[in-house]
Image 1 (cartoon, rainbow, N blue to C red):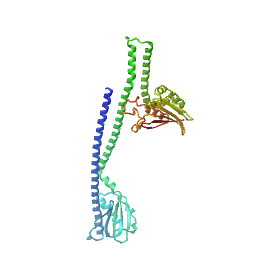
Image 2: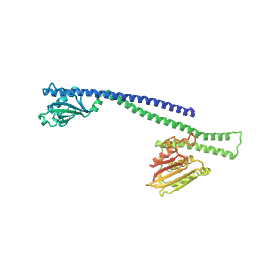
Image 3: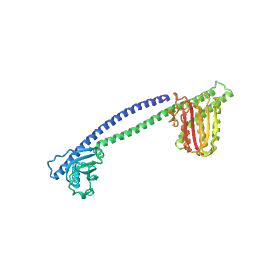
Image 4: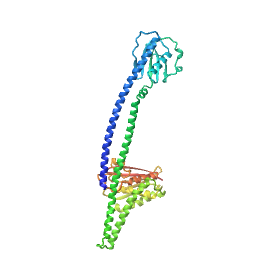
Length: 430
């Protein structure tokens, strides 16, 4: 499949995924709203049925207490709901705490009202508590408070307070609780799938861009090698020694460039898989910076720019892999030049901070916009400016830099403002 067709295919797939995700999200949201609505309705219905059963049970208790006082004519007052979990029963007759406790247990058990509750006997016509007890489920009569006072003759009312009404009602909603839990699990799975798909989508776009970029990067040296090779192989065209050497030099340089491009990809891959070992030794970071910056002198001179060194760190020797640290410095200087317009100015500074060596590489280039700043250290990511190929590279340089610094136990930070340039700070232990 041609590269541009592959990129178009990825674009169409991403667009379709977006529509599918949106449809799934709307469907799941509708299911969730419907479930929440019916769950609320079911809870309210269950609560009404519960309170009706409780009301009947309490009126039955009041009726039996009045009958125990030989009162069969007094009308039982309506049960008063003091709060969502507290109910008052007016009896205005004499009974013992033991009698009240036994009747409550019997009536609740007969109606399958198995919940925790407290009850209190009040002096009739007042709110003064005479006797009471906290009852965990089916209470043990040996726990009844103030049993020694059961013989005191007086008229009482009583009230009951439910301590786990909501838990009891939720437990009664069996199938609804199961369906709601199932829906929540489905929602969690859906969120996981969305995250997975979005990550896959992002990776697909990055890899498509990488393949596209790689094709353009490789096309130039391959074309140059092909032209130079054809010129040498053309028997109808006689070449003097100078031209022959020029074409041979082109082939050599472009082949070297191809090798470096391939090596950069393989090197990052081996680092990520921990397949490449590091050779740590005591190295002078200042020396590495000076030598690496000199490699850019032809480019700097050609663009009338400059690399300014302020190597002020008193301690610049660190345990590091010389090759990889050199590559880190090279990548950061190369990026600074790549994203600088006209006459580039790159400033490299070092200083010692809290037992570490800080290497700061700054430029006055185009800077990095806020949207790109969270992604610049990711594989294949390249800062865009409307054209994917506006700058050279695979989008692997900064991810390589970050990985190498982390392997050295160091850290990396940056600051950038679009239109004003960027500063990258590397911290290594010394």
